[in-house]
Length: 272
Image (cartoon, rainbow, N blue to C red; front, top):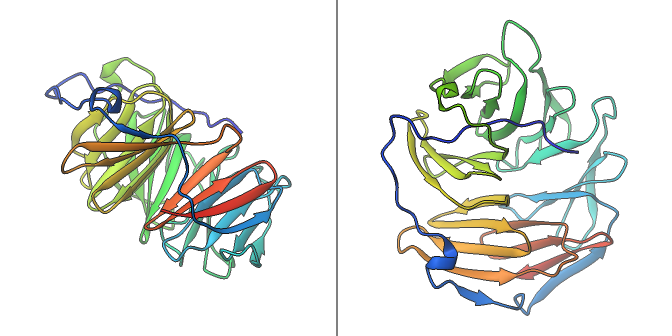
């Protein structure tokens, strides 16, 4: 499923921020994966995410959500095929967020994949169409592509914070994910880079890396995937290493000491 997206380039009223691309930082390119394979198991999944407890969440080809342990044992399942294919956020293992882009619907599940809440974001008194959704505690972050704003909502769908109207930039981008980590909100845009805001939605900087498919922040480390390369940047020292992934890797997910790789036929878990 292709996310319906639109975003902006932050060129007005903001100071220029200098951030060198990994290619100009003399990134130490690793042409191999970490050696230690912790687990490998078969699957027909089309998407993967994980939580910090190393639980694995898969979306199967029939749009079922599966929760598995690291050995591939299915612990729980959830299926609601009315809305199409979900995009998952498992940053809070007690509240899995499933965003159904085709219908602008968010479903929140507990750690047993039982329904907590269902939010229809299409209601005209609440929000305009949405591009991406990410979770944070009891709140959700999203990008409203018609209003050109990042917004925070609660589990009822009520807007609790709204960023500035950024439509004056006049540039359309392609946001693919929004996450909150360590007091920062990160919106990754495949055409512009990774936009960074504080939790009050004040713009801080843009990391100009085009073609981002995946982004994660763990402590002081920023991980992002461009093509078949997974970059790991220490944001304090601006030192970058990278791993060249096999061409067959469909998606990745990273936790503190684990690298999860989704192939067309199986999942592989490696030690970082």
